[in-house]
Amino acid sequence: MLSYIIAGIVTFFFTTILTLAGVGAAFILIPVFLALGIPILTAMSTALLLNSIAMIFASFSYAKEKLIVFKTAIPILIIASILSPLGAKTAENLPKDVLLWLFVGFLIFAGSMMLFYKAKEKKIETSTKKLIGYGVGVGSFAGYLGGLLGVGGGNFIVPVLVWLGFNPKKASATTSFIVIFSSFSGFLGHATLGNIKLFLLIICSIGSISGALLGAYLLKKKLSQKQVKIAIGIILYIIATKMIWDLLKH
Picture 1: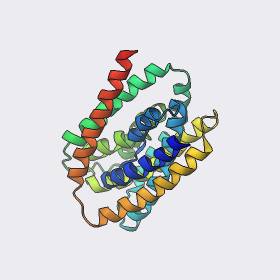
Picture 2: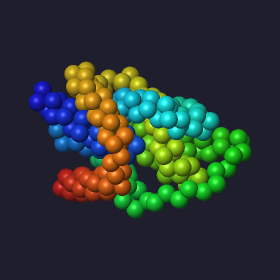
Picture 3: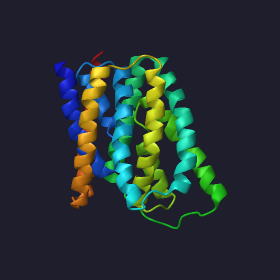
Picture 4: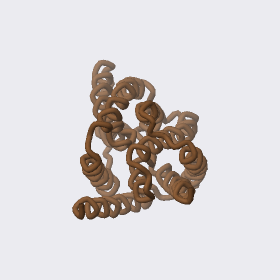
């Protein structure tokens, strides 16, 4: 009971911060949930649904500002939604240590992107065929890995869209919309396997919704996203280091 309440508070805190950065909180919530003694597959399924909930609220605000590029988002979300449950089912057949090492690798990647990646806007390829091709490729990669690691795929999609030439704000907004579906699809993959704790889900959903609303409010007050991303990057490195230490002790 106490661990679930703590999980809800942590969800509120990190969802608030990560909404400012334009990404879902699943990738940082999973190791926190694990530290609270929540089983890894339950942690993944819960974090995926929380990703979806938070991004619904964020995307509503982005859509009003016309920041979501639906033409690019649709092919990505379709492929990602199809492959995310496959990644979730693959996770069922992998040893716990393998999943944890994969997740450590993702934490290091995501932390590095937060700290060192600098977006440079360039001309977007406007060919519909190429946009669909990019969408299929990015959606396949992000959907499967997102479902496998329980992260929703958003952190893979954002840098690729920016690399393709999207304005960083539109890349973040478009990805937020995609993550709603890819995360929920991955969540369903876990839910059908019975990896859900209802009370944990309710408590953390309250934290996620409250955090998304607060994060959106703070973003409108023009807080520095650069400072937020630096803080997130450092936190991810610390968590990855702690997980590596725990894994090597076994």
